[in-house]
Length: 225
Image 1 (cartoon, one colour):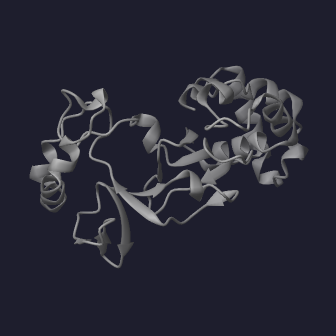
Image 2 (cartoon, helix red, strand yellow; image 1 turned 180 degrees about the horizontal axis):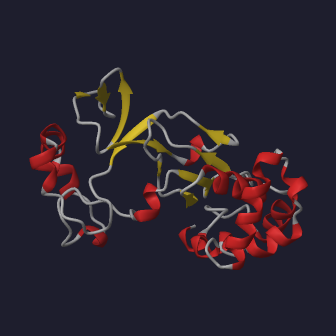
Image 3 (cartoon, helix red, strand yellow; image 1 turned 90 degrees about the horizontal axis):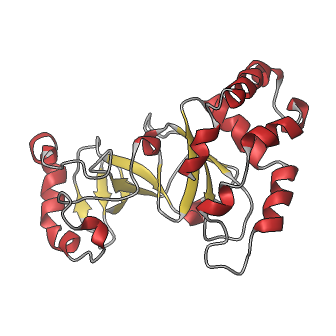
């Protein structure tokens, strides 16, 4: 399912050249890709056959015959998966997928690396970039919300807080429980707009952002970490 792209063709880990329809292929990031403040290009791609857990996959055969042919040729590999989460599920099922996965703008952090920096992830080719299960992220519909959140999460206050609660010797330094201890509403009250390093264009978005926090329209997203 992990592919690289050269021209119009994709290649899998065994260096097999594959021709696929583009609709189900998405740019893909791993923890090792979250080293910079922003991501606008990728090294890998992946096939996303479902938009939610348990969605039927029969449609692929009808609408995406090239993709189906490739998946069918590798059906044995899917059948060898031992995890109970795949039992009784449609063929070629994946996990950790939902509406949040398809948000165009994301703020992400690696669960494996000992870095406290959050990365801003932009869409690529008008499609959201996907992240693997070693990453945690929040998804947003607008670039402005994502950029403001990115600045807040990389603020010195947040960094100091995280460093006080993260156990760096753990296999996963950052976990969902750790990240959910960040309270965006409290953080936004402690930070002035001038501290974010954003130009005046963002002032109106900052005011709306604060209003959304007061209306609890942003805070539920923390459950996605």
